Length: 326
Image (tube, rainbow, N blue to C red; front, top):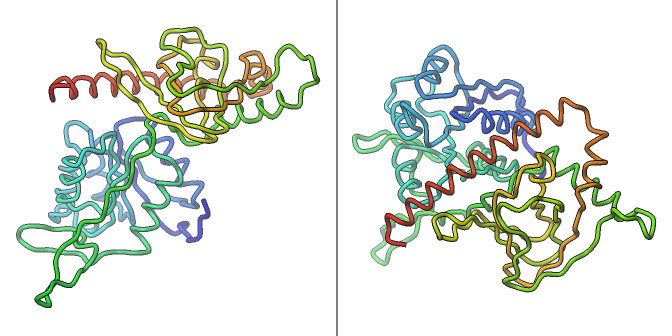
């Protein structure tokens, strides 16, 4: 990812009821060069802050109480906060269903971003909202950026609307590379350079398509880095196999259980012939022992939040799947 625009003069507001999500988005924004970042944990608090501050961009979570992101966006677009009526808004959501996307679009958002957010996808949405602004529409039936993204000529000389294709959402567990995954990659490099015959070093393992790599509830003794192939991560909920996401080359998985010593929170299965570098727990622990205690505390806190969010997301998906009749 190349940050090719100067974002330092901007004031950006992050509105999300998840402390972890706000923390990540703030860190990503700072890495993009943004210097002034405001934050709020809910819609009403955001409105109080916006009443006294002019912002250049907003990142708004879809699912919040008591005012969700769609309600907040519509409230802003209706002019209740005059200084922000036309401010670009990027909706961030843990769900990519068409209904959610259309609700956000019709409320007046500029971009839609699916959680878990990667720094790369976040920057692309921000860049597009700022570099390619759409005309602002203010009519009785709709207020917000023009929803007509592409003009196409009709046979009679007119034109018709054409919605842009929705971006493919990222794997649900493909978290942005952070302290934990950087540590794993360093440990992999260390393990690969270990002396021949060392008892704890990385190895290479092949998995056939459909082969289970590890199962939910097992103790975690190894982490994996995919060299080639694809791996599906899934949970079993009331007998239903609920997919959390899919990883490809360079993806890291299985690391959480090695860091917080909790059982595997999900199962992993090769979706195609797959080759992985396997990192033993002892090698990772040796690397972590050289990491400052404060960083370890932050990582463990994030892992706790991620596990909780993962359980809630899977349960919600299972209920939705059951409601739809499987």
